[in-house]
Length: 27
Image (cartoon, rainbow, N blue to C red):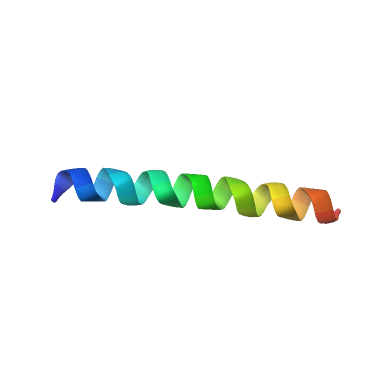
């Protein structure tokens, strides 16, 4: 279960980074 949580956090970090990059590009 702990491994799944780590992968989940990594996915959120990557997804958040992509979202931020997209917003910055739009600005």
